[in-house]
Image (tube, rainbow, N blue to C red):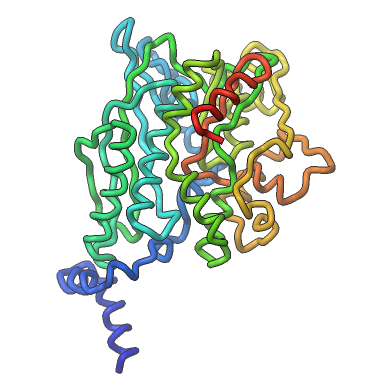
Length: 381
């Protein structure tokens, strides 16, 4: 009888009507584990980069080049972390939108992570976020409304920490819980950080350890140790606000991006991509390793210098802990990446691991030691 009642309630929750809503409200909110309600987690649920590139190439081919001179970054103009529109000689508006499925089970933590991740694109442009709008997909026939309230509370608290007000939002009924923000920021038009303006001799500085995709999957499988889980959540919740402010004050940043769904190597590949060229020419030049001026442009990463989260390397050898998105990322960059013999398979996977709420990847002049010291002084390790 008990099994039949449980089954009946489950069926009711799959029906989009008043009975389903009532059944959802009977679910104990404290027993909810959000990652059980989604097939993918965090930025690892993004479309495969190979698919996205094809779609965007087709879209650019139809829409043609951007002709508005005030568009400093946007679809058809460049491939940046956010769009940028100049409204005066002193002010440019920066806009971005980011949302995803849960990477953790706790609703408030998920909300905070999603907010931190969305705000990051504005920081990666060297800009200051000024307000945000909520984006919500929620299965109200499967989960009680109190869970959504807790997700929004987590996002609200993270934005309050960043001193960014949330002014509204939009919700849709969905099969899986999804949450994120549309964020608007401001920057001086001449102080925008581009993601592909590296200079010869620049050093690369990464402001957070990597491995969130693998650790998030391991957590869902029940394979994550307590210490590693704590570090994972702290990293995911950490705003890139301080890192951006320190870099603006203490270094000459030539290029910047935030490391998210396409992994460290995937986002570095974008940084090495020439600016403002037609899709076909852009692809050909990039595959040949050239920048817009036709000169050789490459980057060298010392694998052992890349910061990793606890347990990341040992879990990367376990196939059940490696997200499909991370493997897709690795496949995408293999043609343009030369791995030395000593770089293990698990390290290659980690370098392509699909990150959620990752750190800033900054290209700065000199050896980068001044910036690293300033970041450490600000409490970032």
